[in-house]
Length: 219
Image: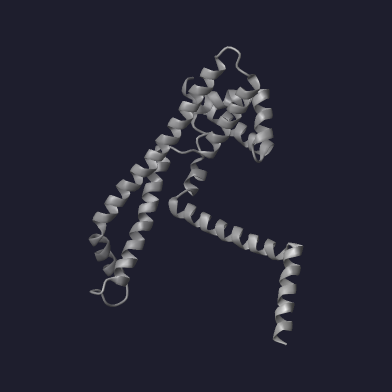
């Protein structure tokens, strides 16, 4: 009887596996968990601010540093209030103020460290795009360069600028505005970039808006 039960369970698992149902459920649960974790960390890290301001920069870096520090401050106050054996009774506004004052030194250090880390990342990303642009133009100016390869390179640059939240920067407006209208670049972008034509339409809109904003400054 026991062997019969095991056989049935094995058979059921085999059927599920053969039909792809069991694996599909496992994959779906894993993907959902990964999505929840990723979005939670994006929220804590202030990634949503990049969507609000459309592009990374000094303002976003400062606001993200303040946001993450505020979360750290709240977590510190709660942790000290709960785990400090000297403290008794429920957490009140007055006790929270006292704890906040005690951990204020750590909060200031965290704020400085968060700003430096985020700004260093921004500078690194900006430096990467600047270096890549110079390399593309240098290669393009070389005799016998392949126009199709250059177009693919430019399409990759556009995708990188978008992924790094720098496509809407006014500093890049002239470059992106010109490249998103190049037929060879357009074909390479649509062919090789996930989301192809839909992403290109959004990118062209951002580039045009940034270009117009930059042009207004010089009128």
